[in-house]
Image 1 (cartoon, rainbow, N blue to C red):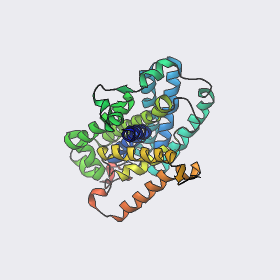
Image 2 (image 1 turned 30 degrees about the vertical axis):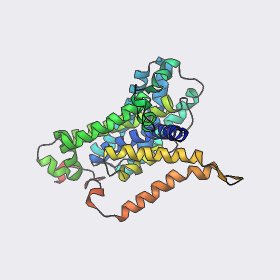
Image 3 (image 1 turned 60 degrees about the vertical axis):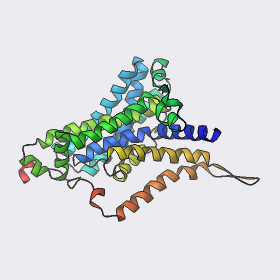
Image 4 (image 1 turned 90 degrees about the vertical axis):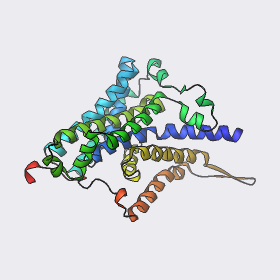
Length: 319
């Protein structure tokens, strides 16, 4: 029973550790299904983390803090959309600039944020909310049914996004735009409008991912609070083959690897305890991500490929 309790606790922490990654992946899927490369996830997450924390600190309202984080991410996405969609700028460069911009803004704001803690009115609503009976199930109970409402929200959004792409006309339209925007335009689909909506929605989700760190997971302000999570999310969009359901398990697997690094820092071999440097253990999740992406790159399957028009700027007069 002790083993089952320990396993359930480990999986519970793994889900919590991967939740911000899941928001970033879902935001990236919205970007890339619309045909827009997204290297600005890190910047939008940092904007969400900073403005969400600021709103929570000033208003003491958790809902306003979350909304502020989402809209901050959308504001960053709007900058990207104007340059990459309207002005047809280079999407890769624009994403990198957005990350630099978000990092700079969050770093500047951090000088004020780090000296002001969040009020209890913001942090308490995000504490664990156990679902009666289900949370008592061994192993999966703590993992799935004894979490913050923020964790539940991430899973619900992933399922809704999957259903949106698979079962709705709007989801089919945006998939068509990602594959061939000229053909979609010829069919009467407003390509630019669809792209703007999905890019802004993707930025909103990235902002929520950043706010999860500053409002729920930590919750206090730390310099570079995302610690490269946005870049991992970019890689995991490919790893989960642009599938929101797979994104759930990809994010949780990353969280499990992060949790494993803490448990394995002191290894017991007989009577000897071997201390492994924490920095070395922290590399494991990122190395695993690279290995998986390389393996996937060697498997040239159609279902593993991204949208055909990904990264290609569309100009209506060119068709």
